[in-house]
Length: 201
Image (tube, rainbow, N blue to C red):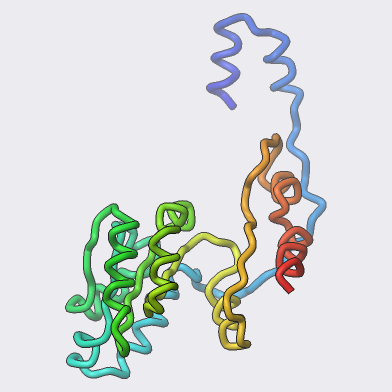
């Protein structure tokens, strides 16, 4: 705010300065409900995978699991896997398409599991690779963090027999205002997410 005020004052934009000084943030009328407790889904992912890997011998892990990192191991929870099982961890660098393909290629053999993680914002770079891995029945676990629903809900859906219908939920319209105002405007509020889910049923 101070930078904007200084900028406008230096240029003599008094009307804009008056508008800026008069603006007061709106308090959100929404009540947010969600999961409680400690931990972050994106960090817990690596811990949960480690629990499964701990039940395997080193030979079994080496033979059947590879984890491909896109320089986001700390943000995606993969650092837990790297620290505990460096022998199955591949530092792939910033190349989501190639790393997803490598994970899918490793998982294309029965009994092998490729694991891939990146930010959801980079997911669109992998669309053709995801399609090809599905057509080839590859065993690849793609962990795309910062999606909003979280891994526990996604795991519940898989356990409940959800077999892969998809819908787009994300920012797709221009708009103004604070984050809570944008949530409803973009369809990312509770009602918008429920509508997107109901459209799949």
